[in-house]
Image 1 (cartoon, rainbow, N blue to C red):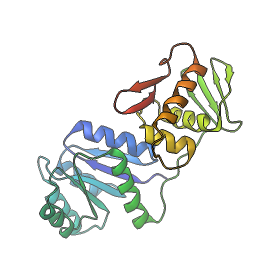
Image 2 (cartoon, rainbow, N blue to C red):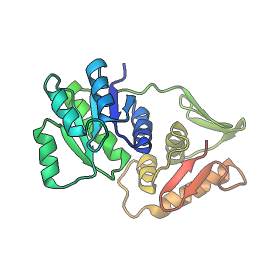
Image 3 (cartoon, helix red, strand yellow):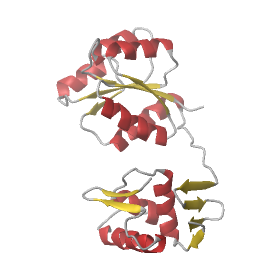
Length: 227
């Protein structure tokens, strides 16, 4: 069964982004838009970890944290735009297990959730992998390690296969050149930008005449597979 994560933040966009990344990592996500709602969820549901914003209506995060710590030791990661040492020390002294400063990379948030879940539970969630992934008219068979486009087989190198698998598992999500390189070549990204660009160009050529019909460049960020 998936671990249940409460994301408590009054900003809907932040809740949505965190939910997307956490669900991709195999977690179940519950959302709360204010402190009172967050406290109700923590008191009535079996929550495995909470990402708790400080500046929220009804009750602020510190008030929620103090109430929860009277009866529960659920892991709590405080999320705040206040990055001063005094604020961090206050949160940790009130019983927070970790402190995340806004703005943050969603991947860092998932990494911190993973770390705290591992401490509390001893194991991370395992995502169920299906034998085949389908996105539009692309189909990747992970048992035979083959890709077809509109029913036509596409020959892939091992690096191209790993990259397509990552992109197709998360259609619409932007991956940086570093993430793509480390997935495809399984080594650290050091001055490898040209390798990624050449690989993505070759993949696009194999998928059809329109260079960005499937794989789109997001300027300044990376690449994504169009849904």
